[in-house]
Amino acid sequence: MSTEQTTRNIPFFKAIIGEEEIQSVVETLNSGWLTSGPKVKQFETEFANFVGAKHAIAVNSATAALHLALEAHGIGRGDKVLVPTLTFAATAEVVIHLGATPVLVDINPATFNICAEDIRAKICADTKAIMPVHYAGQPCNMDVIQDIAREHDIPVIEDAAHAFPAQWKGNMIGSIGQVTCFSFYANKTITTGEGGMITTENDELAARMKQMSLHGLSRDAWNRFSAKGSWRYEIQAPGYKYNMPDVAAAIGLGQLHQADKFHSGRKSAALRYIEAFKDFDFIETLTIEKHASHAWHLMVIKLNLIKLNIDRSDFIVELNEAGVGTSVHYTPLHLHPLYQNEYGYSPADLPVASRVFEQIISLPLYPSMSTDEIDYVVATVKRIANDNAK
Ligand SMILES: *Cc1c(COP(=O)(O)O)cnc(C)c1O
Image (cartoon, rainbow, N blue to C red):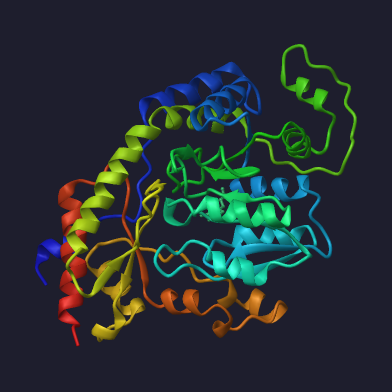
């Protein structure tokens, strides 16, 4: 191994915080108004305009957003909600918090998005929502999912934690399903450190989610967050504490203003990876759907294990030794103790996700990656594969 390889350090992710975010946070700190106030309002307005949604509600995480979306639909005990198994803990845990049951759905082997046939196989009279995840930032086939949901008269609640900005058939994610939930966690495509946004066209759902994000207080209570605020409020339902603070929104505004620039940086990095692996037998990349405009949150590769003498875990060890940061998205939910012990899942229940889980690695992807860094990651992946060819 050359010394060059051991001295490189390419992190899995690097957030870019610009001068505007820093100025905006300083301005907020100096304003004396730290919690939800004018910056949140501005962030909501600008975000709604960006995705073309009627309502945008800023919250303190995508997990909170998903929880509020389900709650606003009255989902509770005895209900079932369809969730893809290849996702983060949050998508399904919020279903459980409401007393409902997450029903895990397998994925499409080409895109890793939720499998429409498996949705059809698992949908039943108790199913009260479908929660697609736009995996890696590539929109699901929303036509098919919306059709199924309409047939059964249930809502589509999108986990768009990876999918800002993204489009399905020219429509922004955030303007399609009944409710769409975005994440601004530290490593997402835009960040507020911790944060999330909910978008919807529906006035009633918006009002309920807004209310429940602040202790179920009457809508007027939000006037507490203004100079002319009153001490008076009414508790109308047992809500949550999910509002976004102005300090976070100040970061979010600066990030939003760079979203297109960030996106084009990630896109060119991703396309460079895809081109580099195109004719390389040991590695596959995910299929890109014709109608999808991808957010390029994650660069996921699939190891062709039949041709390799190394497993995914050891592959990752070698990448890390060469200074390449990696991650795995995700260990499917049905392989975790919670879902095996409490819900009785076994690996064979969701065979596609179980199989691809053994093959996947997420490579570094962020807008500030240089072509030199991408080429180094590609060369390192190829070297490890070639060294371990069967
Ligand atoms: C990050 C993520 C979440 C949770 O986002 P938070 O803002 O951290 O709550 C939910 N779903 C998916 C698919 C995610 O990647």
